[in-house]
Each structure stands twice: as structure tokens, then as C-alpha cells.
Image (tube, rainbow, N blue to C red; front, top):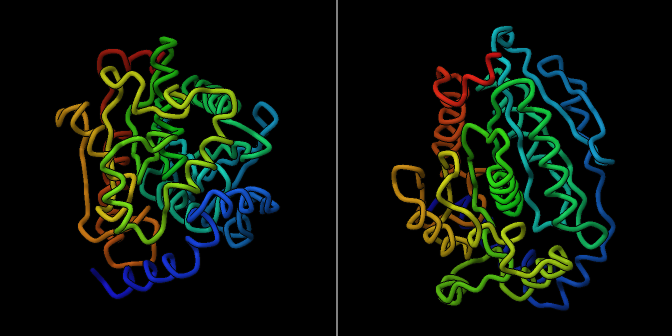
Length: 310
């Protein structure tokens, strides 16, 4: 483990976790805090390297980031949708925007970022509807790929399940970074892993999850995609650290789907969403996931994907 990973883990254990997820009470206080603005940072909007567009979908902001590097191929109509994490409580932050820009550079495709409403003011059903609409609009233009981290990764998988069940056009694939797959954290293995996780804690996350689910039961796939349809999904590329309490359900997802449908990366000593962190361990993970997305969206279309060429 690098000293940078150790330093961030120490900060999480001593400062961040006690203020957020350590107890039900800390989570309730965290839920009440004012939300930050979700607008892209000025460094991005003023940059000549990217184009940033805005639209409103179902009453929520959705931003599209395009890279000006080398110029996107006019023949390509593919796009990527990125769903940010934050325990369904926190707004998108600079680390997310940085990865969005990296995806735009790597793929030369527009990256769409729908900013779903956060708990406690908003809930899972609204977010699933928003993503379904965003995915449907993007699919009308061409092939799509969906990626997300933490709660956003769980939401991305849940929305994809909903699209598959509805018989709509699914994304070409999914990149999931430390996905939150079970809103109630019922996997018995979590108790053991929780003692090693310096960032997340079960009591607070359960409270955030309960508020986010609102009227949905915890086994509903819209909040717990691990309990949903797993056999007709697009290929998944998944990244998680073995000091992340979500790794228990990530392993279960891997075993349920099978090696032919999931590329699984579990990094020893890594903590939650490590590919987004300023640590040496993140660099190969980012290179891998960017390469995977680029290869997938640029691959020739066969079979059912021919519908995009009409």
C-alpha cells in the first residue's frame, strides 16, 4: 500500500467517517446539511480543451462534456453516461469531473452527466426515472455506455436492469467503481470487512440508504441491484478495493454473473473508490477502465447493435 493510500485512509478513519457514516445519528446530521451546487467547476467551463453543454431532463440538470483534443469523429454517435457517487447524499465533486474529462479525452465521445436529486429531498424512484429518460435519449442518437462510482455505480446498474426488463435498448457495457449493490448491507461478510474499512461504516450508510429508498423495500432492485436481474446484462468492468465494505457484494455479483460477463479487478489494500483518489494505485486502474470504455464504444457493431445504424 502506498503512503498516499495510507494517508487518505487515516484521514477517513480519524476525521471523515466519524462525521458521516459512523453512527445513525451522524448520518442523520449529515443528511440535513445543505447541498453544494452541482455545476461544473469554472476550470472546466472556461477551458478551451472541452465543450460543456447543459440541458434539463425531467426537472434535473444534465451536463454534456466533449473533448476538443484531436476532434471527435463525425462518424461516431456513441456516448457515455456517467453517474456520480456520494452515498445518495453528496453532490458531484471535482474528482468526478476529472474522470468525466478523462473519459471524454479517451473515447472522443460526449460524456453525459445527469445530476439526480439527492436524499433526503429526493429518492431512488426519481433517479431511476431520470436515468431511464437520459439513457433513452442517448440511445436514440447512437450506442451508449454507462459508468459510475459508489452509489452512482449501484444506480447505474439498477437503471440498466430497468432498461433491460422494459425491452429498451441497453448500453454496450458498464464500468462500476466500488458499487453500492445492497442498500441494506445484509451480506454477513460485511461485518468482517468493516473492521478494515477506514472510509465507510454500516450504521450511517444504512440510514442514508433507508432515506434514499423511501417507500421501496430494501430488496427492490432499484435500490439493491444485487437482488435484481443479473443474467441479461451488458458486460461489466468492475473495480473495488479489498478494504471496502462493498467488496463483499462485488464478489457476490462476480460469482453470480460469471467470468464471461464481468471483468473483475480487486486491488489489495485499496479503499473505497480508489481509482478516483490521488494515489499511485489509481493510475493503472484508470488506464484500464479508460481503455475498456474506449475499446467498447469504438468496437464494430454486430447483431442487435445494428439498430443504431438506421
